[in-house]
Length: 329
Image (cartoon, rainbow, N blue to C red):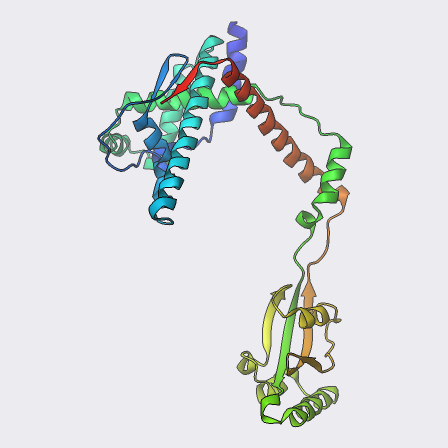
């Protein structure tokens, strides 16, 4: 048993070296509450409404800035239900930890407390204590919560295989179904000249003739940016028609199709679209390339291992729920 505890202690060091503390994340922040009571009983352990509110407070603050009325009420109820579920699961895991007769050495918790003071309070223990007092927490209560946090994470990690193996066919299937994840966004550096058709004034023929004249000058070596400054009525006229780097779905579909299929440095023919005349030039392009399966294999494997580990954890938690006495109020 001592040997097992030593191994478990080593695992704890690896898992909890960089765990964040709620005190620096605002998890204790909450609105003043007067009423308290029993929210749930888990195998004889009590979870109170105040504990639920503490956990759901950050989420509730965000919801209050986004919703009002009945919709806000529904969202708050949902947030509190999720917080209660999380508290129930945590309690089940802690009970499983204690049932296995594991122990957290005091120096683990002491080390974690020192890390919190150093990382979140610049090593100032007095500021740390005053912050706890302002949040109505004693040092002992905070220490107990850190110990429980270590228990929960350690048990979750312990119940997931550390040597999960993903079959090659699963990796290949994921690659086929998620190629977009491994394809860089295609972008082009575009300049544009837009000459309005003015069909409503009967000047459409003259405007098209102007567009043809501009195209002729470009073919003869005129600078595109200069022609845009003189003739274009696009919003980028003063910048020489420079649209900068753009992605797909920036332009109207007919213009996008032509622009993204043009070679670098090529000037388009006149494009008659929506009653106006467009001339495009693609100055550069990049992206649009897809990593090969061989290049992406390692990343896919890591991702699938994380998914499998999460599923194993969820199944383990579900088994604890199935064997537990849980009553909510």
